[in-house]
Image 1 (cartoon, rainbow, N blue to C red):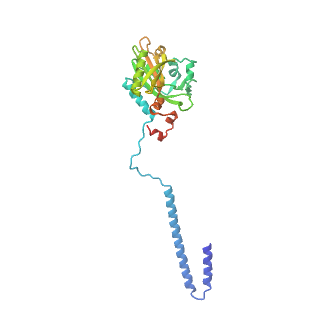
Image 2: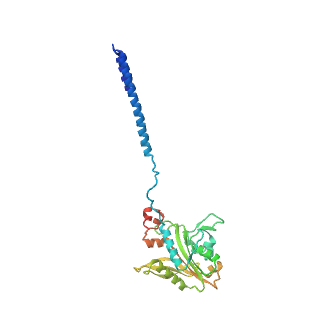
Image 3: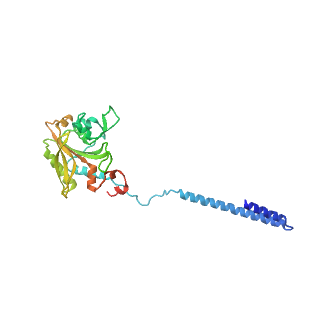
Length: 299
């Protein structure tokens, strides 16, 4: 607006000239044209600068990496499970698997938990909306795999069953609603509690090292008789409770199609998560589930 007023003033002054009026008017027109051309050129230049700045701000670097990206690694739980499998396979066991969504019969009924049995209250079961109410659930332990093995294979049996389990636990430093167990089952001719104690001791030495030993303490489980808890003694002399075990109850063998007059066996089970915590000095079970790369890169 100011430039337009100035131009108007100049033109009015030219009109008052007594001579050379056409020459001055032509010079003014040429000057105005040059200024307009320069302004237009600068506007184009500034628009291009703004466009480059915008593109640079929105630029995505899609060039190929010249260096290989860092490789991932197995989770500490997976590492622990594989190491346990290696130890037991070296002891002559095979690895068995089963479904994580189980029938009530496989999870409880076949293991000597009749309906209303008080021991069921220990498991805080998560039931699934499938079939009749209370007939399908997320397995609370890996013992149903033992049932399925005995149903489908004939003795002698030497198997371990690792996998995820589920209970209605509140997450804290030592509990999670999802956790990992490994269970062992042996069914053979003349198996006794002494064989169980020997197997536990062999495992303890193979997994933890020669400075560790084990012991059995009387306990109770519906699916074993006699039953025991087994502890591991560390080199500093302190004891750590590791899991439960016992001689397979004859009624469990019978319901799974194994003749208890001909065969006997033992079973044991313990938590993989807690073994990982013990081995690597992890203080909070929840750290295993955060997927924090800074934590996972340590293992």
